[in-house]
Length: 166
Image (cartoon, rainbow, N blue to C red; front, side, top):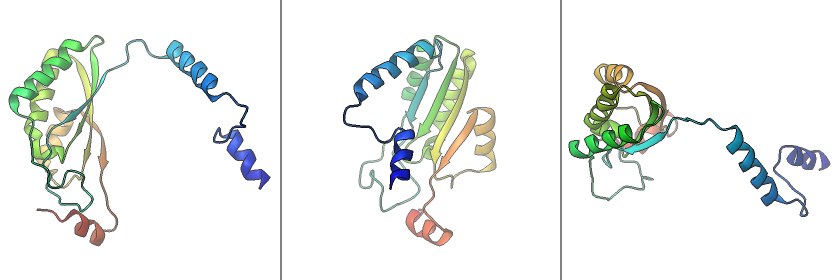
């Protein structure tokens, strides 16, 4: 109906064939470049491990060899973040497998960044099943964890069947 079409046009989901989307994208890119923050905090996505305590049937890593980031790599990772930092702040995003299966490297990286004087915050994608009081304290005090994306797979019964925890 006409009302749906009008809404799609108004919300920028539908264009006429004559509309030059490339020109619009170019103009928006230029505008965003002019108005963007000059010293925006760099964001680092850090893959701590391929290990996981769940055995989800849909896991893309199922059957792959498990690999953990080691202490030497964690130190090198932190040192790179420190050496590249030009604005005194950064954001860290932890993921894996299950990043909490290798929380020791999160401690190392965050400790080195903290000791360098760089301000940082972190976020994590996790199934959250390994959180303990001790880890919550570290996540708050050392990791500066500000956001979690918790992977949920339905109701408790469905979730437990899907996760099939070890």
